[in-house]
Image (cartoon, rainbow, N blue to C red; front, top):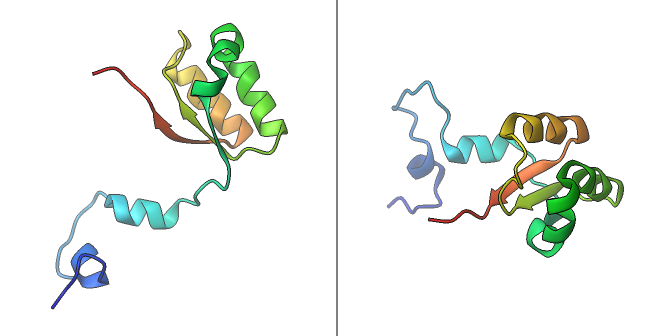
Length: 95
């Protein structure tokens, strides 16, 4: 019997797909060791999001959990994350 944790259940060998599954991406993407929740830094982020990201990296953080983008374009944030090698681990959004 296959459980949800068995390799056969997660990635059956007889299924071909072009797009990797979330499980496969998770296995290939290193998890950040320390991620900062930007909720606690929201006042700093409202003033200078990119500077706050830079400071977090200098403090030793590997990732950040966003609380929106504070008016900064996603492409700009993405470029900054790549430059700093910070991983985005989540984002709080209204629904």
